[in-house]
Amino acid sequence: MPTRSRPPVPGTGESLPVALSGTPSRHRMPRCPGAPTGARPAAHSFGHRLRPLLLFAVSLLTGGFLGGCEPEPEYDLVIRGGTVYDGSGEAGQEVDVAVVGDSIVALGDLGGARGREEVDASGMAVAPGFINMLSWATESLLEDGRAMSDILQGVTLEVMGEGTSMGPIPDSLKDWAKSQQGDITYEIPWNTLGEYLEHLEDRGVSVNVASFVGATTVRINVVGFDDRAPTGEELERMVAMVHQAMEEGAVGVASALIYTPAFYADTPELVALARAAGEHGGMYISHMRSEGNRLLESLDELLTVAREADVHAEIYHLKAAGESNYPKLDELVRRVEDARARGLEVTADMYTYTAGATGLDAAMPPWAQEGGPEAWFDRLRDPAMRARIAAEMVRPTDEWENLMLAAGGPENVLLVGFKQDSLKHLTGRTLAEVAEMRGTAPEITAMDLVASDESRVGAVYFMMSEENVKKKIALPWVSFCSDAGALATEGVFLESNPHPRAYGSFARLLGKYVREEEVLPLEEAVRKLTSLPAENLGLRRRGRLEPGYLADVVVFDPATIRDNATFAEPHQYATGVRYVLVNGQVVVRDGEHTGATPGRVVRGPGWTGWEDSGS
Image (spheres, rainbow, N blue to C red):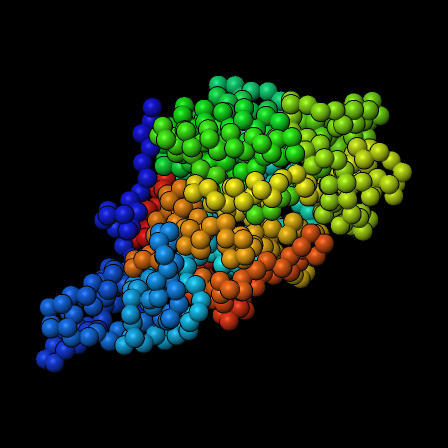
């Protein structure tokens, strides 16, 4: 078995593996009668890069060795009077937080200190920035780097790449990729995943960005859309692509197995790709092959991949879909906890709603989609093929995941996104309503819509139970996600209706499930939003409020934070977040976006540039 390794994490008893960096800042060094004045290190010297830790250490040492002489540091920013939930899961403490440059340098009673900016957090919770474990901000950040819907909930890191990622993409696929774009259109000047992430940073984004490399993307690069296994040589090429992406900073490899062409991948293919990611300290994360009728069998496949690849595995958006499958969640939890007890690293993430969202392709058989979107559209226009597809759409089966049946029927399928202007007036109607308007059966209506729109047609499927949502929230190994873009209530984003999770998944956790329903305590919710995903991803200096960690910080009112988006009116920002810092810069002040774009690429443990980066 290959040996996996993760980088040492500050705050775990291991030595800090990297130098700390920060922008130049004024400091009054500790001074006592007769003490000499120290020279400030040059802005780009090694000493300056270690300055946040050195200042913290000096303040402690001088207080101890010089008879309690009080230092008078002047910080870039001080957050005062809030209750700090540091990400550990421990109860909150009323302490101050000091920031210099991009780093946290002190926590405690800083009453004598001064900051160039002072934040009064009285009555507020102060926490590490939240991590969105499944973000579809891949395109929305190209349109609007402010990440409004997420940053106003306290999200400071978008983790992308569920099955498909924005690289690798050769020049030969770029015209096809552009033809698949919807309301948001953009050029593709990058080829690799690392280049895409750097492209975002160069353009300016308000949040940090990270990504898995998509197993589907790798498959399309090599095998295309065919329903077949890769040859030995092709699998070697796919594995090499994963290695390259990991060296560029990907956090692991991700699969989404209900969709084509990922559906055509067998377990040995997934093991090979996961093993490649694991050799760089990355993880395997999966939208499993079934979340409904074959939920437990699909879990067994994920556990097989984890075991045979010797890799940490995570379940994307954990659920038991379809009323007949609701009882399976308890058995899934039992199996996961048994695997964890036997030493397998297995975790999950979730969004805080009873409805999922994807496309109408998730209601049609995978064989109909072989060959790619154009071949699928052609089949939907062929009378003989249409008859076969329609029959399979209404026939219960365990052979593929039919979300229309999982939802209980077309009345529980909400249409939310079209590509063609001529169809956008149907946004917000159910598939059953549109079928009645047109006088056609729901399965025929679905095929007609996809063929006319030449897209998968965005759809929301109501298919989970509220009881199970609460059970999942309480699990200690479950983190959180939006499974959505980072949107704004303006411009091109208003061309379609997203699932309200795009605007409310994290605020809903803290308002509805922590404050109102007391499903779990606030300190545990913060841990599951911050240090848990950071540790799962092997991130350096993220996910905690500790000296030496990067200053991704959210200040929110636990008494008022809430989600406001609904399925009928989804374009509504959450409220209750007062301040957000990203890498030490204020992005949200008094509940309003400042326009700052300090977001950076957050790279996984396999990145080859760690030694040269000084971070």
